[in-house]
Image (cartoon, rainbow, N blue to C red; front, side, top):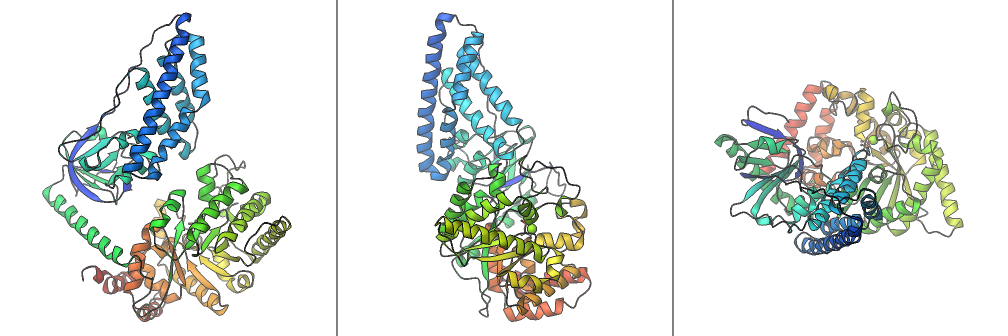
Length: 590
Ligand code: PEP
Ligand code: MG
């Protein structure tokens, strides 16, 4: 929690989970724990206890199926599927069999035995060091609570509806809780726990109200009817704000809505400068949630599919078939737009659970990551290449290797690719024989040998996130030296210039897929340098498209020539800001 003195008496900082700004009175929702009775039952009662248990399971199933139907109607199919995983939990034989055994062993009442076993399962899961599994804990907890409520003969919880609109403040909300919230009576939802990907947050997002999670102890710091401002863009909660702060947030809200209108009005238009220069605007896909959002994002294709996110979210190395299905789905879904699939960029910096059983590295960013890891684990690499190639039969697919530092690596990776192609042919499995192969330019070494790399690949993708950190020897994740991580450093500008000039000489196209492409300040520079495409997170598409559509290409080119002459980073950033405000910023007030 952070306190910003200038905003109000108490300001809580959490994780933004659903966008929007709102204000209103708080309703602190304290879920009551069920009281579980404990008593002994005689041997002769065991069968009636088991019957009671089985009836409670059936009743729970029925409730969940009904809830699924309601949620499908109110929220949609994607949210309803959350309850499929609840039904799946109920089918877990271990949970049921262990409960029965526990009763035989202890002769305690079945409610108590189920509670003991469920608690043990929850405990075992919470010890697993895996974010995805820990998030599913909330689902097990939710289902167990329902079974217990049925065993104890409690009525289903009523719908949370208020006469006045409120902001719900909770420790955590289970998907069942969210399903029972009447949308129109809720202004926002904020919780102590949760992360952006937990099921309750996914559902809160579909309520289409602002949401902030991960506030740690909001339920203790906020009391009923405290007046709150919720900023779902920044993850900020202001408790009992002054009238000035309230007015300030009303202004921010108005500006955001105005921006939204501008963005919506151009969403189906091409990314083209005012003087007709077309730049492809593509998306970076960093997790499976992004994939689900794709149909609502209008782009020119996928410029970067970070496949490691699939491995990380599944907490394992998926089989060829599993990978193929995921890639095929994406490629088919995007068809005829291109999908650039990057091979695994895994390493000590993005660790794949205990799959990578190797020693810790002192210097993970310079260690066995990305293409280096793939070339050390050829079978894993081949499995991935096979899956990508097979997906290429279903739509335009491009293949990309991360962290190339030398020609040898690229040649070796291509050689393995050729072997995989031969194997697929031998098995009569279709793929795009002319699949384009590109590389990430994200190391100073690659930047220096563009001419040597060019003959071995079809395109370059500029990974500014890594390029900047390696060039400036400034860890991209270290807050303490964040001031050194400067995209506007003259060393970065000169290196970019060198890359673009060398690539143009070789006739190779460049996409920029690092975060620099998602920062509107740098768009004039990247266009002026000659970027053919930009690839950004889905959420950045509207802002970057608007930036491109407001710019004159001729102005951007002249500005780039001028800025490349500058040597002082402070002046460079000031010039970038001035240019942005004069050429793009003003469009917001017009
Ligand atoms: C980059 O380095 O700029 C990049 C896009 O790759 P990642 O952020 O996945 O390392
Ligand atoms: Mg990178």
